[in-house]
Image (cartoon, rainbow, N blue to C red; front, side, top):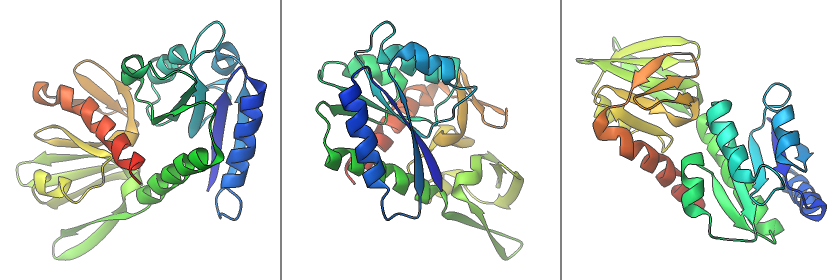
Length: 241
């Protein structure tokens, strides 16, 4: 698979170091990488999203003009992109509360090291490999499988479960809470009848989510707070790898 990794930092030395580290991380791997660099928030916003789609963005917080937090909100709100992994980099460590709503993947303190950069990239590659695994289910005594990465969400209707995928719908008999225990950390229950793939959320609204296929699913009041916590927990689990 070919990845696109961005760097947005006004320090040329940091950009050069990160470019070298990222290239070295992919040496000897079957996956390949394109590295793109911006030196300001304004130049990044001009190029994205119409021209560039990124898998990962190393983003400096202390940028001239618009800062990295502004860029994070632009990605999540204006672009409605929750799939891009944002890794903030800064010489300061006092931004935790400001970054929470942006859902960054991680935060690295300058000066960054090759080992730390490669560690973060490897965790993200593992996350993508996980997306390529299969979810199996049974219907009419036959067993079927679907790629986890292609699943947008599960929806239960009494004893039936619909799997809504990028290529259509599948249906089988089961219990949603039991199925949730079989799923990886990027799946979360948002009401008693729906489990979503966090990587396929296109837009967050106060009462609902818009999925990549345009479907709208309702967030129960009981799950609003835990939805953000679920995303944070997923990030924490990957940080332990």
